[in-house]
Length: 172
Ligand SMILES: [Zn+2]
Image (cartoon, rainbow, N blue to C red):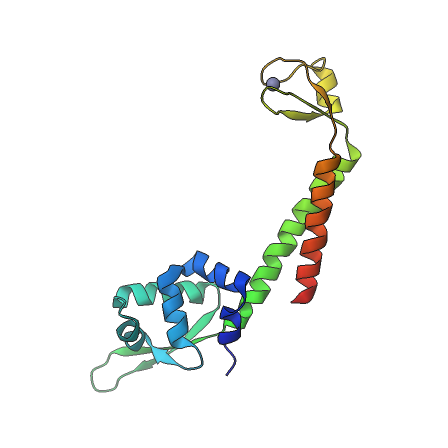
C-alpha cells in the first residue's frame, strides 16, 4: 500500500498538509500510513481527543485525501468508521494550485510587457501610461509628479517565477 510515507518526505506536500490540518493532523496521518484504522483507534494512539481526530479526518476527506467505510455493529447498533489515506492525490491538488498561479503570473507578465508605467516615489503607486497621462502624470493617491518606471526587474522576476512553476508542474 503506497498511501503516504513518500508523500510526507516531500517538503511541499507536507507543508500543504500542515496548512490544512496542522501539526496534530500530521500525527493522525503518520498513525494511518500503510494501514486502516477507526477514528477511535487513531484518537487513542495519538492521544488526541476523539472530536479532534474526527475533525482532522473529515478535513482530509474534504480534499479526498482520506476515505472511510462505515459499518454497523449488529449488537449495539453503533456505526464504526474505518479510515484509510489516499495521500498521493496531494500532487494533483498542488498541480491545480500551481496551474492557477501560473495563469495569473502569465497574465501579469503580459500586462507588464505591453505597457509603460509611471510611478510615485512617495507611496510607490504604479500606473500604466494611459492612466498617468489622464492625470497629467500626477499621482492618483497623493498628487505628486510621477516618473517613468523601469519595469525590467519586475518582468525578469515574473519570467523566472513562471519558468520555475512550469518545471515544477512537469516534474509531477
Ligand atoms: Zn503618490
